[in-house]
Image 1 (cartoon, one colour):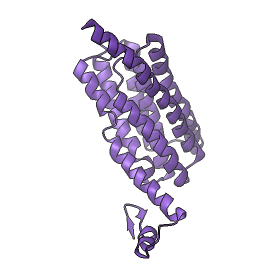
Image 2: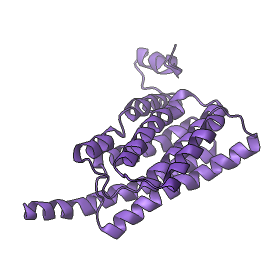
Image 3: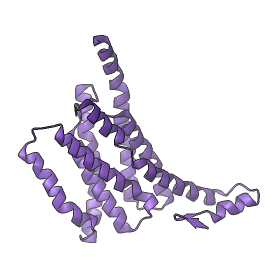
Image 4: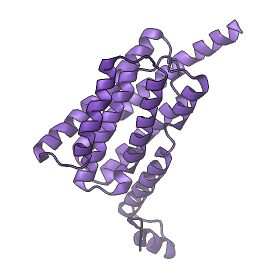
Length: 235
């Protein structure tokens, strides 16, 4: 019995006999269910960040470069997973995260006016190159190299924001909820990636995501409390 690529026969058979499903039966099932749960949750993961910016009409404390690099990273990761033919439950959230990341960058551009000519060149280059990468119309060796660089891209996407938070001793308009979901999603993806026997390069990417997202989440917890207390005192 299969539903959405999930084999339920093993678990249902064991339960009918009054037995607890074996580990080899249960873990793949849990992995698939968590995978689809992550895909479902990813449809709104960046919504708190978007709403917070729109509410305050400010991108204070947000690193434009970080969000731009995040778009590049999601594009490469999605293209690679499509190219490798991984099940949708193993990468589906990348599609929704990419769409939301593009919306987020557009909003950041809007509230960062005026924007220099050099800044506008970056999205133009992305629009020219991204369709080719997503279509997988590049040399396989180059694809592997590009995906390997994707880990560095995601790392570099977090570093400017982490450094800016540290320098300002503030996380500005960063959303705690979005950062928390990013961290939780990365943790779950490490588990599902192992269960899906995905390439080690995919696992490495999610491992980096766990470390960097935890750092940003910690900064929000550390810096936003003093900031909130300071604002309350001013009022």
